[in-house]
Length: 378
Image (cartoon, rainbow, N blue to C red; front, side, top):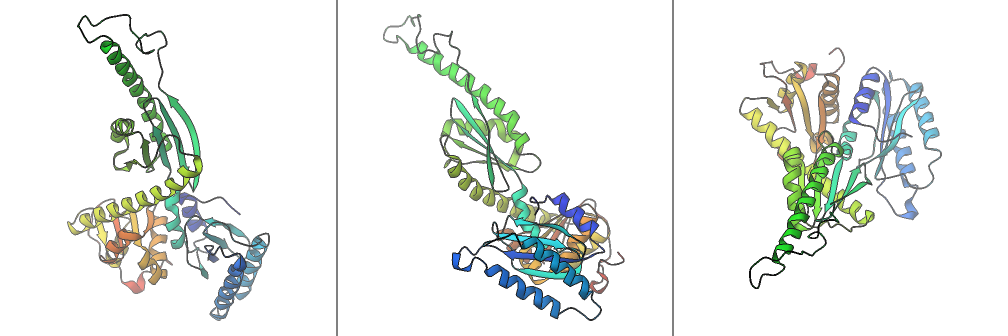
């Protein structure tokens, strides 16, 4: 069984198996009732039996049975529950190309056909996006990475204290020269020194955070209100709208507490990002800019090689499985990013035809007739 694949891995799998007959398997693993720990096996057996019964006469039945045998061998070591919330596999009659946990819930699906079915997997790839987390106060910054449901503590930064400075030790041998104000200058000096060292620490933080949140990863900062706001001012210009200041987080959180909070925050930020992206692309499409929406328009743009980013709603992918897979195949073969969206983003996209795309360039192309839209021969 393999590690969670990256988008580039799925893209390579789609290309390598484009002409192969592939057994694509998705099985939900959300049932945690111990009495039903093997219920997924019965569901899988039923789906495989139905797929075999529905095979056309000219379909490779022997190849299907060979792939099923390899799938069964792959699953033989699994005792009880499947791992995580879902499980997937892509199998040909010769070998298992990939199998393992899917990091988001997926509906049960079995398909024996040309090329792997990847639309259900794309929903899980939001977990691939790293989240850099900083918990800060005036003296410390704890830095974490959350990726693929795993939390790792990277390091702790500390604000330096100059032990030779009397002000940093809280005392001063100087008077203010003003009656009734003895010690005030020392207090001010201590505060200034602390702020200088805090800001130095936050500059170091700003160097590290973008590297952890590489690409389009998210950044979350929490801790004391003053330090959180200061860190946001330093980090914000480097990461833009990928930043969230989260007042519910605090410096002394335990890793299990932070992991639970990070999972919820990452999901919320992912949905917010998808909604912004859908709105942006639809605005471009409606204004005649670098955007397309609706199946016919998006398919024509894919055929012309215009698309840099394809978005498909979850509802469209569920009710138009073959069409969605064709669009994803075209996008991956042309080097575009394909993504399925849920929640509010899916609802907005459904109102515009269920699919949209950001374009690399604008050029008039005639919509492709749906009956000629198959991948074969494209």
